[in-house]
Image (cartoon, rainbow, N blue to C red; front, top):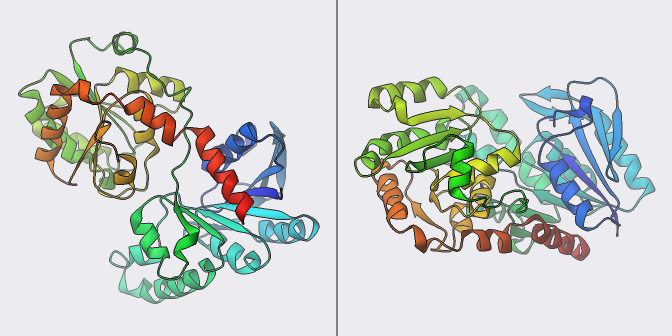
Length: 383
């Protein structure tokens, strides 16, 4: 098999100085190496925090970091492109890009798409056309230019892994439908597994008789958390419940706190941020329902993690979520921006909890890292 080079094309991975790169590109690369150790795999990334090329090896994977500059908040590394050119001359390579609606994605596709197979994996990044209604008029010419460049470059991709029908439909305007495939990111179902609800609640100091509603999402307007907050008083009319929100603040926490004060639900809402998977799994196990009220999404990993822990999911009909919640015995889909629909769905899950008994099995059969690794390798072997 060809040498597989995973390339993070967008924001720097972080953690490179401690030899612990974070992000989906390293995780997918490590997952493939774990199940297919004979594959030669590397992981490359632009890194604006360094002025020198840097590399290290971990578990049989070589991680390489290249100096880059940030242009309008997006990375461009001439060093990475030059080294990739030399690498392709020396070895038979397959490139796996992580995110592609950016300058690095365009450059790699245009320079190497006719020479080596390229897999382009969607990570929820958005096409330029998606920003057309929110940019200033002065930026419109630049946006239209980027849109033209993108469509020219992305035609050279050999395979797309997408997270939603919206992305699939967008790409189908200029790429063959046969090369566009819905594929979620992998999860480790051995880490995200049920541990017993009462045991998990006790470990987190949550009373056994409290219904725990959990959401794991960044604190931003697009996550629709305020609609869940407005649903909480309606749920509390019938159930003793508490809402825990786990997520990094993206400048929206103060607005959410103002909503909480206005609704007088301060005693029933808690914010936190957990970045350790084993601890996060305890929260999933302790919860009685997972809710993701997003206004826009790809295919959220948090939903798959929740299901893997045996937790029913309520989520909005946006992005790739309907494809994930394709089984009625694992969750409920609701319209976005609708507190009443959220409240009714949560009450329904509480009342009919035994109905949602397929969550763990469904997650293992569809999202486990071994299954996703196999599907990825099969694509590699066909292009």
